[in-house]
Amino acid sequence: MPTTELITPLLAEKAINSRLTCMPIESLPLTQCVGGTLRENIYAERDQPPFDRVTMDGIAGDSETWRHGVRRFAIQATQAAGAAPLTLAHKDRVIEVMTGAMLPIGCDCVVPIEQVVLTDGYATLQTTAVMTAYHNVHRRGTDSRQGSLLLSSGTSLRAPEIAVAASAGMARIRVSSQPAIMVISTGDELIEPGEPIADYQIRRSNAYAVAATLRQRGFMRIGDDHILDDEASLRERLALHLTTHEVLVLSGGVSMGRFDLVPKVLQQVGVREVFHRIAQRPGKPMWFGVGPSGQAVFGLPGNPVSTLVCLIRYVVPAISAAMGTNQRPPERLALASPVSFHAPLAYFLPVAIEHDDWGRPWAIPRQPNGSGDFLSLADTDGFVELPPGPNTYPKGFVTSLYRW
Image 1 (cartoon, rainbow, N blue to C red):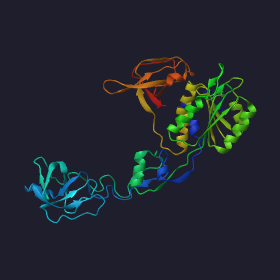
Image 2 (cartoon, rainbow, N blue to C red):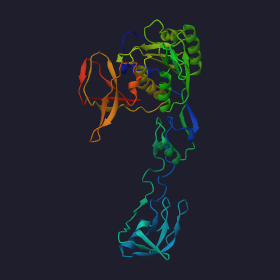
Image 3 (spheres, helix red, strand yellow):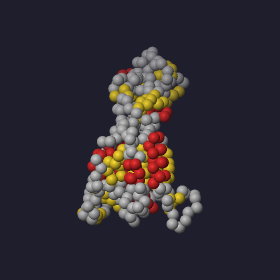
């Protein structure tokens, strides 16, 4: 049930997550899955490596012969990568091998070509050369065995995970469908970049920051709309967006002013309020509700710093959770200097990350000039979450970091 009381950031997070509708699953070609969330387990198709694999260009031979003092060998043949394995005919011979090739049958080691002199069909080992058993050989099955679990459902698919899926022979994999997200800014004062602007107007920047943040995290089905502070227009457009999108992210119109119409209109179009206002600074007026078909509707405050903080702290994790993505705890970082805060609210403080002479990272406070000072966020790395005041948090105080 909605409440007029301020709730904590943790309770807001729990309230959002408990009302999420999980995204459906679809099967896509592997090339279209980067940035997605895996929704099946992937197992090894065969041993990895699937054979004893040569790791250096050179010669392959029998290490026992080398231990008996033989240093000069006749070159029997060449073993290329991608070819069936040759068989060593005699222990006083070697086979020239290429990186990635199967280790020839009868051979148990590889000497790099840099340690060999090749002349007239013979290979002579340099004095520094060593032929020990399985030297420069990646043994079969040492990375994984056939049938072993390689990737778990919920894994975020980056380049390494895509490579793992390809190695398992997966031409298609099951992933979460991308939610359709509508980014909506409200306000008569907002003017698009590039358009003529009056002294009493401001540029429409929040929507660009919200869309950039979402795309940066792999969400690509993003729409954009700007609605004036008119109740009838808001009602018509929000009702339309609810029929075509799973997530609505609004900025502006959620505070207590005469023209802050968003909460009222959202309820008119069937969105049930879950909470309105969080005990935090900035971003206190944030609103969250659930649409008639389970749509997640986030009403972010219009001040730019508040918009970004709430987006990173609540919206991005919520969309990821709805896609079944395994959630990682926030990074932890120490303050580089003391911070005093007097309000009984959680404090989200922008920071830059710098490293000291020992390579240790520190959070350098970058206090903005109010929640409208988005210019100060340039060259910062994110924000830290400090407990409610009044308190002075000393240098070295460790807390959660959220990156832009």
